[in-house]
Length: 295
Image (cartoon, rainbow, N blue to C red; front, top):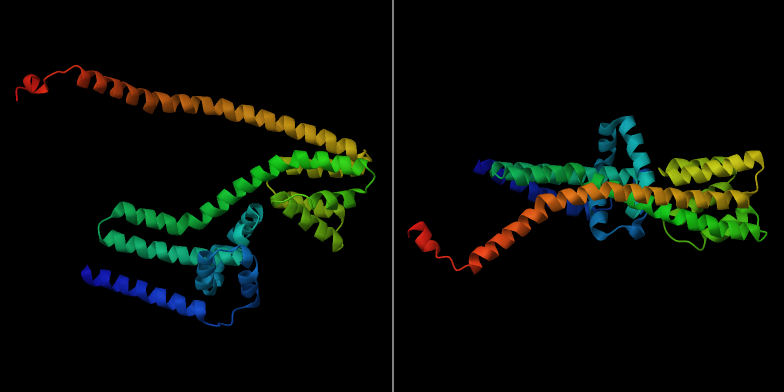
């Protein structure tokens, strides 16, 4: 057992030095992987950049092991997350390789030491740490977009009613906003500048966002374009419907939170309060516990 532990520690030390050497080496990587290192480099921290460089050589192997269906699935997840920290599919594969290796080595080391719980934690870390980051980014991005969209539609309706065309008004209002919704509109406007039709560009916008409100926005625009409805009326009505939907969702969340809060209070707070009160009464009563126990 000691020999195996020493071997694992030796492999870990070798991996650290190999990673440092790979980080500092001027290796010739494929063009798409070089692009993956450059995309979002200004938004990537030092630790993530180091992990990317250590694992980028193994990214193609990870993608081959994932298979086409899993690759397509995670490409969509990364799009829904908005490429957090400059994340691309190749960077995801690189991080999965490095975190998986670290988690696997940690699992073996602590398993040999008999610390099963810590070993399982490290194994879960290696398997799911990258997934947790993507899942969290998807939720945050969706919430921010759904909070921004109604106010954006109101401002857009005012600008369009002032006489600007829809394309120019969209560009003007989008330039005043920051965050994920402004990023999505910038992508849509760039696609339209490159020759994509407005209908197709907004269909791509809907595909990139798993949000009911974004779907409502794109559908209303496309239906209004087909039926010839005034765009200002469509935008105002859509903003009103979104706020009504937000209010209904808030009431549903509040209704679901009441039973959870009641269960937490009944399960933890009430027994804890009774224990504190009982302990206070017993300690304040001056009972001689030595006489009671016969000691």
